[in-house]
Structure formats: structure tokens, C-alpha cells
Length: 66
Image 1 (tube, rainbow, N blue to C red):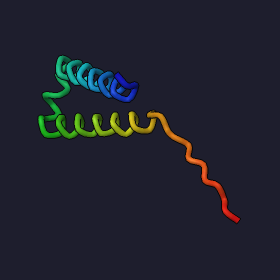
Image 2 (image 1 turned 120 degrees about the vertical axis):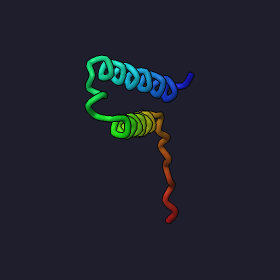
Image 3 (image 1 turned 135 degrees about the horizontal axis):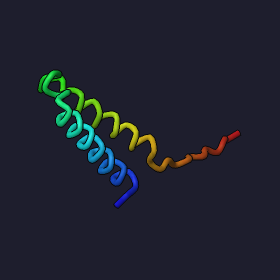
Image 4 (image 1 turned 90 degrees about the vertical axis):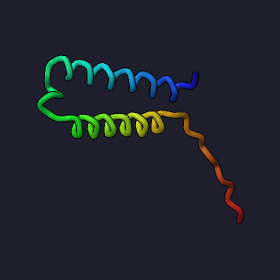
């Protein structure tokens, strides 16, 4: 598995764990399902952006023509 895919899997597990902890503490009952879903979508979007930014980058060198 590529490192970017492993990062995304780990991030999804992290979001799941944090969501489970907030549910167990009763925080999600006070927030409501709509805001919970919005928060999860935002967290997954941030995870995707971070995974892409940590991915391997290629350096492209251009030769100048005189």
C-alpha cells in the first residue's frame, strides 16, 4: 500500500475513534446529527488534503533556450 493510502486509512481510523469517544461522552447528543455529519465530512476533507500534500512530489527542471 502506498504511503498516501496508509495515511488516509489511519486518518479515517482516527476520525472514527474520536467520533466514538465523543459519542460515548454524550457530546454528539448535544450537537445533533447534522453538525456531526458536517464535522466528519470536514475532517475527512482535511485528511485528504494533508495526504495529498504529504505525497511524493516530482521536481521538474526546465532547460532555458537562448
